[in-house]
Image 1 (cartoon, rainbow, N blue to C red):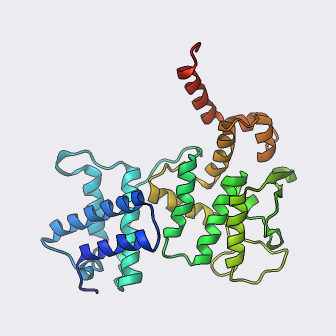
Image 2 (image 1 turned 180 degrees about the horizontal axis):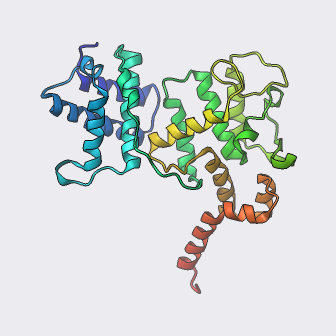
Image 3 (image 1 turned 180 degrees about the vertical axis):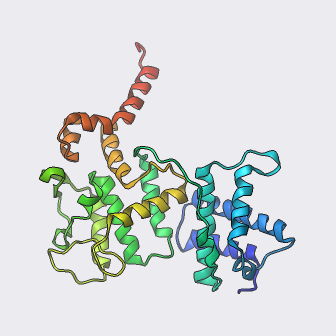
Length: 310
């Protein structure tokens, strides 16, 4: 199909996302809009319809020209912000990966183009829907094998559901799975705490352990990299970076932000700050208060609007 229509390939990719990868309708629409705009630009630039073979020959200069076009805004319209431009580039890369894997149309030039720089601030909590979306989005990456998808979903679910630091999540050993009702975690300064394990966390970790293709000793790290070595924190950070780009989330949506979310979601549900402090393993209550500052401000704002005596 290397000589087929580029737009037909786009339709096939969106069908693949919908029915094979089970992406949400919003994700499919966002990907489709981004890639359709890209194809339309190339058609105008080259003066005619495109084939998939043409897409295999798109140069890095052409892709950079397209990103510049979207940044400036066509016909006097407002251009894309850096975050939206990064999301558009992520969609284009995902489409080209599909062309490579399914239609035998590779294009190495696409990987040479870097997205815009986005200023990164302090980690900020993500909403419950965003956290669920991040975990679900992992299943849409065709470059991961099934066990790798299960692994990354388990790690992010663990960070969000138990409020763990990356190093704490990756410290789990093979003998820790299947998980029990609680986890004993050794955090900063060698301080040990007991963390309850939610059913969703237990299910995610158990699913990964069942799919793990490596035979491990009981005292070896549970989470493994593609070639069998221990999974690195950098992999978790890179995974989160790719996911937030695909979903258009802030650069503050880091793995550590899932720990923030654990705290703010508990606070929003009425949990006591002292209890949250113990679950996070903070030595000082003031540290916990900084974690929950944003959510507390939201609660106070809602109170001020709703309470008759406010």
